[in-house]
Image (cartoon, rainbow, N blue to C red; front, side, top):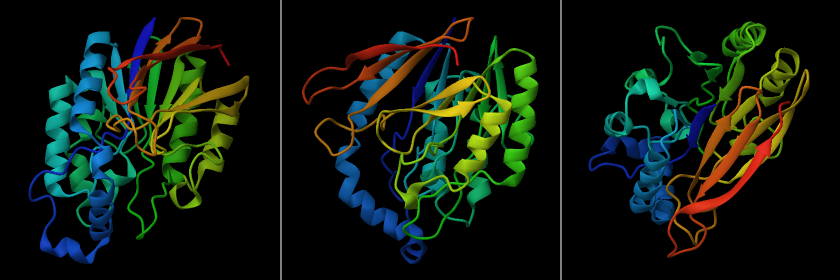
Length: 292
């Protein structure tokens, strides 16, 4: 039994000095306006309580599907690095970057480099990265790319998709449980067009031909259960709300998922989070996904 925790979109409060004067003339200015409007829904106390619950449940590994930052500034990258280091050893945590972690082009590769130890075991190359944990192979993708103002789309690109297909086929021949991580949902209609994964159809084609056992994502700030076609049947696709959203806001309250993956590839999902304002974090529900 492999026990995996999944959380997403913590949107850590920006540190003092996160934005410079030059940022008033690029996409970060729009994000700053949005943050002033929405920052109250991301409560550090809620995130702290959720992380304490994760620690109490002690999963074997933790998957985080992006958006640690808000403006993708150097100060935020340093803060995200320190936050991840405080969570535990990088070998026990896998991060798939989100669109807010890759908001603007200038300095983009250097900022993500600070988070590289959490991408995979061998991070000498680019995505995809693979982590083998017993009978489970975590295939980490990067859908986060800098985009034009008012867009939060993602894209994997040709090189990443070509390598992904080879990786999935090789891992399948080994009989491993193939778990795909990415920020943007690969299912149709999960988010609006301006937030979509632009090459989601091509990713679904790869999974249909090469196979996978589970896909985890964030980005939508909602609890989503979907599926995409695999060679042997439906492949479950699960998303979680933001890990810091306080109850009482438009989006779903903060929660995380504990996934228990059995030797026969059956998956038990336990949702843990906040149901109502003023109530403590608790188990919200539990369900089982059969092998695809």
